[in-house]
Image 1 (tube, rainbow, N blue to C red):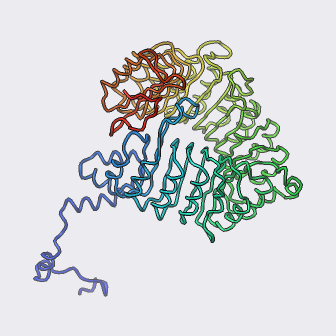
Image 2 (cartoon, helix red, strand yellow):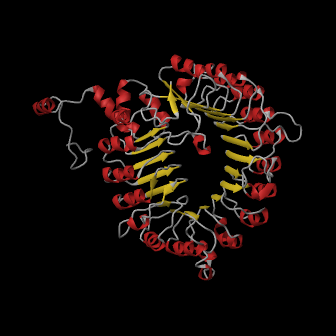
Image 3 (tube, one colour):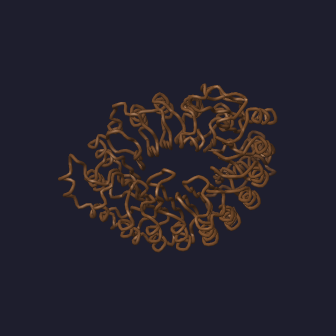
Length: 602
């Protein structure tokens, strides 16, 4: 041992010794290719973005195999684009799965009932392949109580279930999840329909301290056993997110907040006293309960709101990063005292009942706003519009960091949209929904072409665009020329001719999702995109000028593309004339075998 060697550390053997030669014979060094695979496995553990992993898997066969073995999360953008068995064979070590089903236009009742997107085949296959699965995220999928029971039985260490815009199951299925998944941390039922089976699912969580970190059931329109809920919250010390349905009154909310002052995200349920508990509810000091929640940064709910109780939330406004008032029919005078204190606010959802004056107050108080959604209180096309180009321009001037906006209104001007494109160059999502069909610029009566053209020209990061109002082919020429990063495009009641859609399909090389309804695009426009459809996740066209023959030509030219023709109720027998709905998507496994009578696959 030399003086520089540390005491106790084994010294490397002499390469020429007999002992070394014998050890090498017994334990041969790994093959150089295997050494590279081991190194690559360790490197890929730090690669989490889907696009980066997909790119890595295309380098060579070795990277393809190694990437599959190290992938712990799988995202399926269309449940029919690949079979469950192919996924489990390709990725054998998955712990988290996200699956999307129906396209977004299903939210507007534009898809036939019982169209599909069933979770059953997925949970049956994954139950055998991934017994260690910990997380499932589903969006616009149909699942049954039996599916949820199988999920609870199959995955012993299951921790997170997130259901967004899903349906088909009831409180019995929730009871199965609550009772079988003892390590459950997240149960998120956002905008999900749950049938009332008369089962008290809240009481089915195991006794003793739970692992719950997030419990969201604000859209579950079923009565709740409040005593069981209060007990559950009390024995869930890690609970950070809690969003309640309208069955929970303001007085009951107070009792829950006292039990869980550590909450960071809160959905209030009904923001008013219940009729049965009205007198006792009024005795609580609601402001003190909110004040005690020092970590609260996200606030939502406010269903069946009684505006007189709004001052109770004043103590937490200064810390709020996200505020959702999309269920609160409040006016500008009720909004101002709240919004003026929300200097840190980054996400705001409101109803248009706050009017343009309310949006001006938002612009003055929230310079860090990143996302704004303004929903209509009355979604009728001919309703009176309380917000307009005035509110949009105020937001663009006061909130220069805005990245995402959804704006419902009855009127708009090119000037206001152009101002937003210049004042908010970091916009990634721009969705403008002018409620009336084919509405021109409110002041000049010109089409809205220049406004949308300015958005795609000046907002270099734009990836999602929704158009509305009177638009000619010129607007689509702008989108095709400048919307090079646009991945999702939604079009309604717009365009002059097939040329408009041709501009988009030939120019938007990154387009993944294209949704079109009630527009004058026909077969020629459809066939102009043959070069790009294999690169897209889906194309949806409803109430356009398509023929069955034109759709057949696409199916012949692109055999790996699934071409579905959907018929509305009462119109199941389609002739060779107009097509109600065309839904096209790429699939590695060909057409599905669970179609209903309203679906024809070409």
